Amino acid sequence: MKIGIANDMPLAVEALRQAIATRPGHRVLWVAANGEEAVQFCAAQVPDVILMDLVMPKLDGVEATRQIMARSPCPILIVTSSVGANAWRVYEAMGAGALDAVDTPTLAGPDARRTMDLLLAKIEQIGRVSGALDLAARQAAGAQQREQDAPALHGIGHVMQYAACVDHIESARERAELENVALYVVDTVGEPHRRAAFGEGEAGCA
Image (tube, rainbow, N blue to C red; front, top):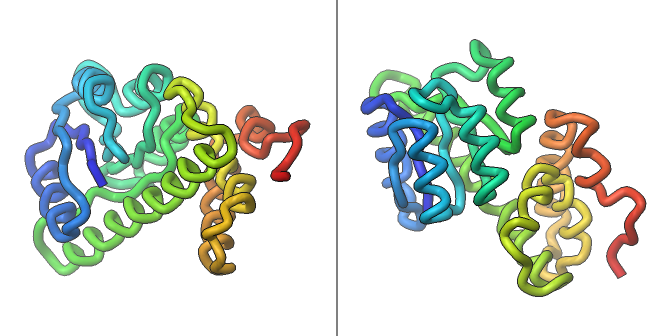
């Protein structure tokens, strides 16, 4: 996966780089030192996922998420020093389009391995969900314009409808995992995105 990093703290960036480097299939596409750079870099090179800090100069993570989802939408994972301590900001960012949140991994100490593994698990989970969504969208409607992706990412519950249409998803466990992720995110972003997410009022898969 091509990964964008938006974080103004060098130690945090290094921790993220080290975690990403442990997976051969992942690489850092760019590093933005503030929210404004993140918006610009994403418009120039759209990554498979952005690891977005919440507190940054110029534009914070919430506003950067909002602008990215409006201009060049892509999956965004909030990576912050403490999800619990920043809960209100996390929910605001997810309302703006972020898919999930995780604590920033540490470089050393007894929790270093655990925090890196948790980050990587979140990245891979988003990759699986996004991959299923993209494949199903191509099969159902052909190549779609990028601006049409924003509501689908805002309401990741589309994955539930799409997954049912994808012939290659034969595993009940994988299908259930997609549904659980979709339900979690749709419940978090709230009612405004629920109808779009589940396609209420629209025909399901043929």
